[in-house]
Amino acid sequence: MNSLRLVRSTHPAVSDVDVRMMERAISLARQAALNGEVPIAAIVYRGEEILAEAANNRERAADPTGHAEVVAIREAGRKLGEWRLSECSMVVTLEPCPMCAGATVNARIGRLIYGATDPKAGACETLYSIPSDPRLNHRVEMHGGVLADRCVELLRAFFKERRAAQKLAKEALRAADAIRKSA
Ligand SMILES: [Zn+2]
Image (tube, rainbow, N blue to C red; front, side, top):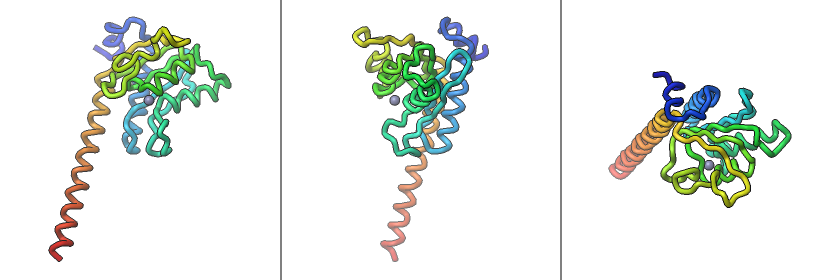
């Protein structure tokens, strides 16, 4: 089954445009991993028009708020000359954290489509339900778990590789220490 039909069978309200955007976000996230960023990416679009796309840039920008969603939402607002993004949808490869879920509410994003759920920081269904909280002044239509397997796999591979690199670095340090001590 191709990915569109697979998604459609579980998420009837997710369109082929949404799935194409998610596939594009997955490619962006993969690219980010090559630059040493945690592979998460987001795209804000209106209809089929991409307004902004971004990957995590926390490392490169040394920005604690440099999550893909915040970077993309800011750029979309600049591009539209309007902070209200109610006619826009956003795809993101990982369930947004409290900051980013808050940003989707503050931006009045119309629809949010995300991939993997996040047991450590997910604020859309896992730890909190910020975009659907009736106490807030805007509710976001949400569809989670879209192409989740591919989004999870990207993250899993990234952290596995990073752990292996850290282990190698530690071993190299130990070896250098041993040489110094024996000299
Ligand atoms: Zn976030």
